[in-house]
Length: 346
Image (tube, rainbow, N blue to C red; front, side, top):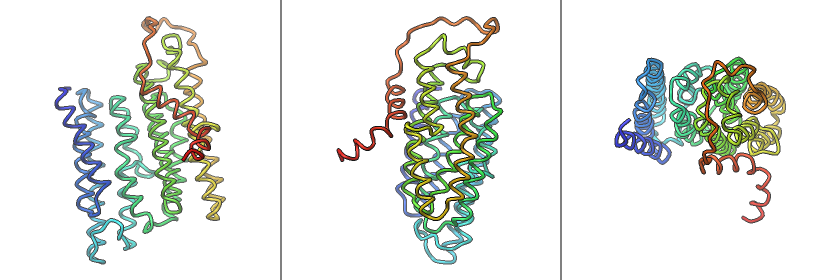
């Protein structure tokens, strides 16, 4: 892709995100979401492969539908209450429509079908943007309207997302699809706590984005697209494979790594809100996700394929690790152990 064109699209992404997260009016928020959608489409379809074109088409149709529902929800609220302010979404029907629209934008169950397909058809770096940056504006809208949302509906969507994200990720062999189902599962954790403690939702999103960025950048450096390629990666890049192992374990939420922090806080807050059954269910369902993270980690570091004749012989080159991968991995592993120390410094 032409560097000038790429610069325009990335700048538009930043502009759209900034407009949405800083707006008070629904029409401005909708405008930012539309700019985001239009800016990411060329980045999805830049390879001109039929699968990439299909992914871009699916993404456009889903996001256009969701944006229409956002506008419809805000217009219904304005019709009944005379308010266009995002924080004044008080009408129950508008709240339900908005929850459906944002669930569609994020890929929460039952509006998740588009997300794995779009991620599989996109390049790895575009997949990283779709999993992290593109989810930030809708989550900020949920954060601003969290007082008006229906807790029972969000809890149901959250538990279904964690369950389906875990179950459907079990039999996947493509790394991008596994990361898509991982994203759906993590979104369930964010949704369940949104009404009770919105700041934990944002913290969870920031930590998830950091760990996912570390995994995607490592996979991009190793040029790994599926599990069979991952099995031969240890001999080519042992340091990157070790980094991938640790980051995946953190993403799974194993203590004492960073990924355990949001899960710990969410379970603690749910228990305080007399929602211990929901906390138990979502904790047990996250074990499904743990299984496929361990499967990825096992393929990356422990297995060596019995026959390498099917694979082109790769030269073992000691290329330096990208500094951003090193920083993100360190944060993904060490943020929870050093957080008490940071709290004392602050």
